[in-house]
Image 1 (cartoon, rainbow, N blue to C red):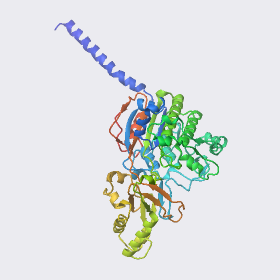
Image 2: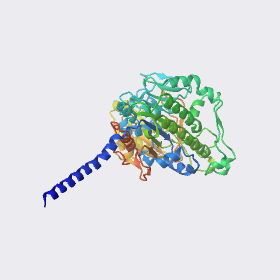
Image 3: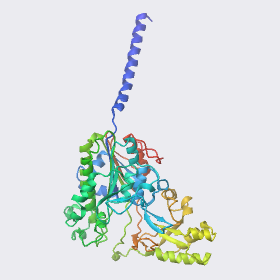
Amino acid sequence: MTKDTEISLSRRLMLALIASMVTMAIPAQTNADKKQPQLLLNVVIEGLDATQLDLLRDYFGQDGFNRLLSQGVVLSGEYGTALDPTAAVTELMTGASPSVTGVSSASRFDRRAMRSEHIFDDGSTLGNYTNSTYSPGALLVSTLSDEARIAGGGVTQVYAVAPDPGVAIALGGHSANCAMWIDDRNGNWATTTFYKDPPSLLGSRNRLSHLSQRLDTMCWTPLLEADRYPGLPEHLTHYPFRYAFGRSNTARFAEFKDAPGLVNTEVTSMAVDLISTLRLGQHNGLDVLSVAYTLNPYEGGKNPDTRYELIDSYYRLDADLARLVKAAEKQAGANASVVMITGTPPSSRTRRDDPRWMIPYGEFSTRKAMSLLNVYLIALHGNGEWVQAYSDGWFYLNDKLIEERKADATVLRAEAADFLSRMAGVKAVHTSDDVRHGRAGANPDALRRNTHFSTCGDMLLEVLPGWQLTDDSNPRGASSEKYEKVQRETATTAPVIIMAPGLAARLIHTPVDIRMVTPTVCRLLRIRSPNAASMPAINL
């Protein structure tokens, strides 16, 4: 090989090496140029149903559900067991199960006070525009909202808006500027003094546009003509629904909150005003606005068949979502916004089907069950008030009496569960020991992780489908109102949609654990996951 040939070969090798280095540098430079999103719009919809979305998709507009479904990653989140909205939203926001978060239900039973209370009840705080006193003190771990606030060093803004206080606080977490909800008693937009940065909009809206001033003239009627409601039987179209909430109705604010056709629009208006007045998405870092809606069937009417109202609620929410997303992208820009839509399982119905359909039906009274169980335990272990209370599916035994009599609590629970399981209308009864050791229910692992053992009772009751569970036990200090629900088995999955810049639209068919959703979004947002989120992010 000549000297000139060696020089030529060396030059070619050098040029090839330089070219390869440039090629490798291009993606690295591109990644470095990518900026953190400026705004997360986090929307939670109670009762969102994939079947209804499929049915109504051709009837929706182009900027609401249709845009999200066509431009986002669509999947199904699995909650494991039925959870109420407060517990479900907490699991979503923390990426952790109720056994870890401390929130397995919106209520908890206080054995010392002998009463049920809200899980976030906190007498050390004051209500702001409400007499209720709440804080996220019962929430034992960090949330997505907390991590976003920490990542921004307190400069960025994090707000939560919901009809319900439990959901609002679960969305806001510990570190939000403010979490807001509609008070059941006075109709105010309310918060708690735990949150130190309530927006001025909160006070001005209560003064200048109070719900009580507008509710007299508000009426929920069908948005469209009857033939625009697919799958609606003809007999329902002859009697369009009409709901008003006049001053003579002392529970009108609570009933308004249960009317998705109206309350979702009220929530949207508050959220849109927050976006514009607080300039969300224009700060030096990531802002977060969490918004909660409901699509639960409205049960305030005379007809147990609520399909008309339900479809109308979807139509109205489609328009509300389009308005909300448009406002967010106008403020932050479409290329700087991440939108997450997450459904939660529907709540239990409180009304049975019309008796003319002759669906098997019965009523299970918790008061009668407690009385009979106590007589049974007296026969076995002597006089005493062995059964303390019933609350949120759980029977509570008298711990103090058990200790005084030196009885075996595990044996007592097993005896009580065996007795209760023989009652009419009972599907199954599980002791807390069985739940703890993964021996209970159709999905033992899911039931165990969705139970917080520091606050749960001794025996968990399941009634048969179609039976009405009437909680009329009224432990001392509790409300005199009885609670009723008709048992119906429901899916524990709900749709999830994630739309982000540079994220290709796709449909993931296999359901994913709901605890994986927040770590996935945190990766897109370039912030760390909540401190109890142990599940991996979804590979998008």
